[in-house]
Amino acid sequence: MKPKSKSVLITGASTGIGFGAAKELIRRGYIVFGSVRKMEDADRVSGELGDHFIPLLFDVTDQAAVDRAENEIRQHLKGQGLGTLINNSGISVSGPIELLTMEEFIYNFEVNVFGTVRVTKAFLPLLGAQKDHPSRPGRILNISSVSGKFTAPYMAPYNGTKYALEGISHTMRKEFARYGIEVVIIGPGPIQTPIWEKGSLKRFAGSSYFDSLAKFFGKLVSDGMKGMPLEECSRRIADILETEKPKTRYPIVQGKWVNWTLPSLLPDRVLDNYFKKLM
Image (cartoon, one colour):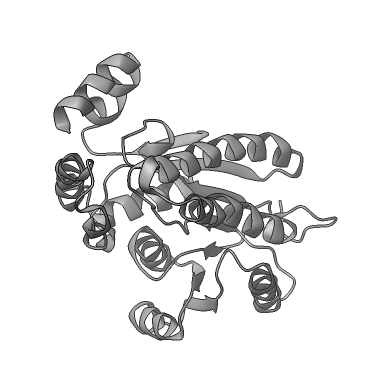
């Protein structure tokens, strides 16, 4: 049997889930290539994670930069294959549909959806979509969200990207099976990361939505700050990566019955009424 490569590419590795996964995988003996967009982030993360972390400066929306990164990884691997691609890069554009610009919608899709497709297409040969691949076929983990299954108000662009990502991921799994490349969807719920400190509602002040927005995002941020510890999420992602025969999709949520199983069983109108009360 061909050897299994212990190399991983993680997009969006400077903070949050990407950083946490990189740290855990390095602890388990993997070489991690991580995309960052700024040199200062490359220096900081390299300093924290050590020699087994190799930073790559590229934005998933930049085809030329992605191609350069593919060439750089190919040179590092010296004829070996890439073990795993973790498509983690993502942003969240939020606000009322009525008040968001089309440019904001488009940019959210450009990063979360088209960026994932762009990176995946670039690295398919190194994952095994080539003749006489030198190692066992690789694996793709696409980081979705509970928002890829359940929608919330004021998050239309983000919800839309995650639904799209899940649909594309299911198609990837069916198409890439010919090469032996597994595609797995990972759907985290609230995770304790710096993302909860970034949002601002100031631009919507004075609108008819503002009071409702404040209530909704107050609850969202509160839940996020009390969410699953990043270390636990990272361990679960690493375990999935190492599972010989993985499921097609994994929810990573605290209180799975209340926060995942039950909502999936309830009618849409019941969930709608919950959000009405919340807002």
